Image 1 (cartoon, rainbow, N blue to C red):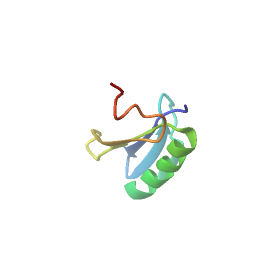
Image 2 (cartoon, rainbow, N blue to C red):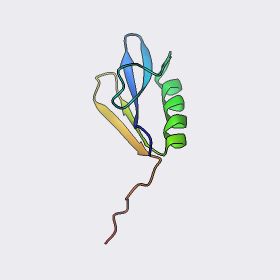
Image 3 (cartoon, helix red, strand yellow):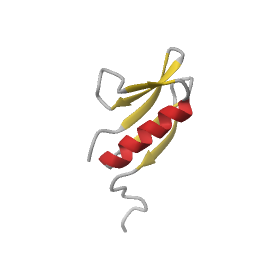
Image 4 (cartoon, rainbow, N blue to C red):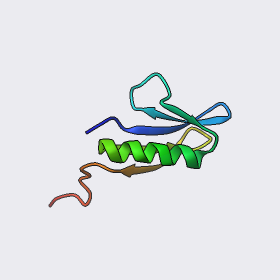
Amino acid sequence: MGKNQWVVKKGEQWGVKGEGNERITSFHNTQKDAIAAAKSIAKNQKSELIIQGKDHKIREKNSYGNDSYPPKG
């Protein structure tokens, strides 16, 4: 499983950043474009996509890996 991908606000742009990375992987003019890019990476790496809103709070999460939902039992 790869690194979770974050969509973050950076100045006037939106960035895609691998979890734990210091640098932004790519910059985009819209959140929609950043989400599309991050989703592609997350699907390829079988990881999670975490989207932050303008207020930097997590607004959405999507899993593209081996999600344990629904939980066993």
